[in-house]
Length: 213
Image 1 (cartoon, rainbow, N blue to C red):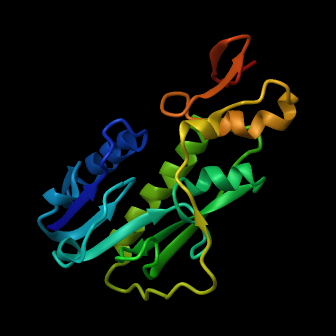
Image 2 (cartoon, rainbow, N blue to C red):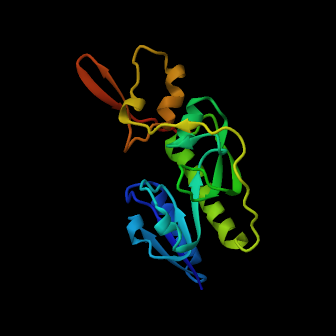
């Protein structure tokens, strides 16, 4: 039976519900463990790093036949943090999700496979995340199915990098028109990094939710 470890260091991250469903779907054909700390990664056939915010050293990588990362950009462009959010804020209509080999340099490993994700212009945070997480699970499925025949390719081109987002990046200027702020409002995570603004001496939180007809 195939053995799989998944490291997701944040138990509050939205992807956890998707990972639990993926584990349940594969439990007949794979022995799968979900880990919260890379130091618990003792070795298996596959190690998937999904929203893992720890540095995983060579000593851990060498314990696995395949150690793979899921990253939401068309690498080498968009290495770094929260790439799908930054790309939507740049006005792009979607993003690429890349399955790549883990490497000691940030997001620099060889590419296994990629999926293009189109994002509707009216999609909000939880809908955008669902598209991302669905693509990540599809790539994990692809890895299990094609590991025996995959031909990894080196990244080509000049890398670019996104910095880590902070609460300040979700700050709204109340003097700007709503239409100009819409993309910032729709990508702001209402739980972890809520959109907010200061007005008349107080700070206010904003949550964007569609009103379905």
